Image (cartoon, rainbow, N blue to C red; front, side):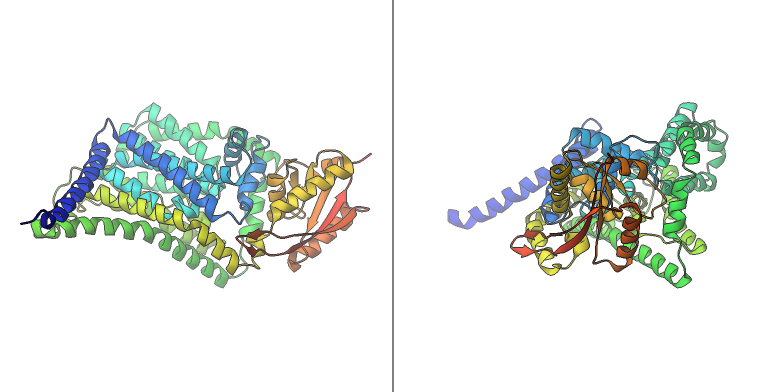
Length: 538
């Protein structure tokens, strides 16, 4: 036989061997207690960097989301609350932007650092429930959950919960197992940290409380000092924030009541249905991709196994800690069912984004099913799927961005050139008054980007909003001068905006400015702004 006839087979064998070596390397590092942490941290870092690069390309034609700009604005001063929410998300942004420049890419890096930190904490949770092999599979599966990649592009109070809530669950599992005073302290501090992010975390806190009461080992936990020390720690740690709440007359609850109350049961049902459908669709992505990874391994070994026992088999499974797995199943089930039922009962508008921090335990709940088997090769399969999805998205991102601009040339809310307006207004103010632009008055989706993009970073006032962030005041605006901005294209906003300006901006110099952005040869929407210049008091 000639050499040519067997060289291709040799090359194929070599390729197979290299894949096996990669798979063996991943499995060995993931299951070795001495290297598993470093593999997890390394994966999280690579995930954060690659998806930051993807978001920079994907969102190149857009300004940052108003929630991101709002978090930046809150971080300019470290207060005990910001009108709408507790302060932690603002504090994190404040620290971040004292280290990183105020640019689009740094906001995406902040968002991806948040979700990647959550990946590591979720792996630590998984290690209390399953073995190293399943824990790593779960983490990569979670990285495929859209909340942890392209859907998590905007850093806000919802996304910020993805760190303290996993820390809270981790602290609960630790306290449930150890039942000591020290574990109760950690649980209490984790609860206070979560509450300082957003009050919505009471959904998870309540779920943990119910899980502790339902669990078969509840008496052992409740008779220990851990839960009672945790409750006392939360109460003491929250005192400064509670004092602030009283001082501002409980503004966050005024905000929630005004914004999220619904006038009709039909609208309420529509929002609840949308919330459920949206989050089920997002969860389908990691579930389906994980199933593909497991089936690929099973099918590859089927001729030798003779049965699907590679991924599904009854009998004892030492890889799963059943008491802790029960905690995870209970918490996730309660969190999945409770909010929609509560929204229906109280006729509350439940936003789809409120599901962002609530379903991080779903991959672990699935992987902890005892009859599910986890071949070593599955770790390579799920990692390869993550890598392919990430690289394909990275390559396609510029084209997607260009196509989005071309097909949404009138999408003013997304593509209006607010950053250009901020820079132009800053130049106008400094040229006319030779001072820093200190205050901007406009609705939040206009005012917050002014704060972010203007080199002067003016504090914002929103006309008609009762829940002031506390960053500035009307008296300060009149003393320092301000720029008012109204959008004539929005009929429901232009009248109240002009009414406010007529009352508080008497004698202001009025201008009309037009902004438009071009990207990839495609024009964005042309937006006309009515500007009111109120000079500093003499």
